[in-house]
Image (cartoon, rainbow, N blue to C red; front, side, top):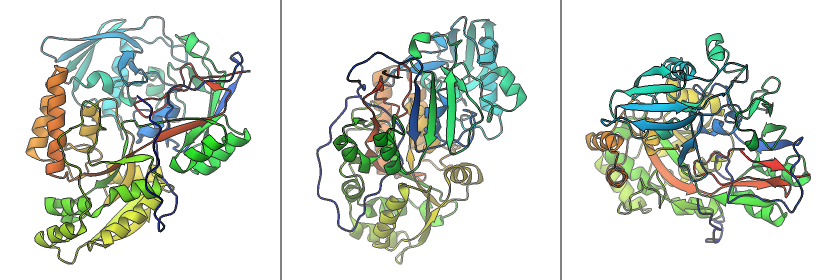
Length: 516
């Protein structure tokens, strides 16, 4: 990712106080120390806003969980900071001529943290677990896989129901995280995780508070291990997180828009940039009948003043958008128009849809930064007649209500992005996606989605994805309202080295160290 130092935008809106959005932790450009050799005995204290409810990577319901979980788990495929697929536990992969088989060659002499060998049988067990475990949040990512064949100890063949060119990058996410088969069989992966990663669990996970890991001495790539351990402290108050870094109580951590300039003034390293995440409202028309009407959904989009939110709440560190993929990314459309704030037209559309006096809707968010965004959205909706009741639920419970119980009406949240567009589209926009609770999608959207999955030519696939983005703007989806992209950032002390910006939006700690 190319880092951008954002120019300051318009002055802050007088009526809007400084709060922020939920961001995925990520690095930028590469942090550097003023000098000194790496300290191999150092333990990094990292503050992070989003605590996982479980340590089972196939069940945890948030992409934010990648940051702590990937300390313990390697994936079949890894990514570089630019988000491109590179060898991980698989050293290579190849597609059959018809695109319905993918053969993975596996890395030899890799051990799980319990001493078990990593092999093709372990891959098969993990894919079956991801597809069948109760509460799986990677089931949609693995839906195209019919079965996994064990060709030999270090070769696994994935048989697909139909071509899926995005499967490789989907296996670089939680769907490709490899757990020890013993851990899977014991049924305790959520509390006693065992992977092949750089670090292993060091004591019980203090849910919502602290995760401690120590260096795994049997790791297959020891040159990537620059730390003796990591203590990840979960702290939703990012101002408190910044104070912890400034005072030396933590070495580094995720910060948000309000803390970026203060962190710079304090002399900390600040890494900032855009990733594949975006702020969105997840809709459930099954619980709000008005939302089934496309005119109503367009009206809501026109009622939102995105730029006001970016300028007022994000201090200019953001970009108003109504597309799920960022400018410059191959799935973005350069032709789709940006919705303009137009409350008068929004009122007319509501009247045409049979709601001249508006309607009621509950908007839910997790505690913390999204709360202020919800307040501003409620005020903007009120001006076109939509009466919004605000609700707040703890993050893991909110995920359950949204994706499993499907009891929410509208949820204001930050989507963390996925490594391949197919994953984002399947999860958020397509029928059976866990964040498309009503299972609604236009026939044209489904057609384009399926076509791009099978298209192996990158240029042709990009064209199909751009057409799909156009479809979403022309016919506002029943599941999502995209609000804006925001800058994600990490602040760190001068002694921390090796932090990088990750296009995925989830910082990884390969090569990260602390100088003496």
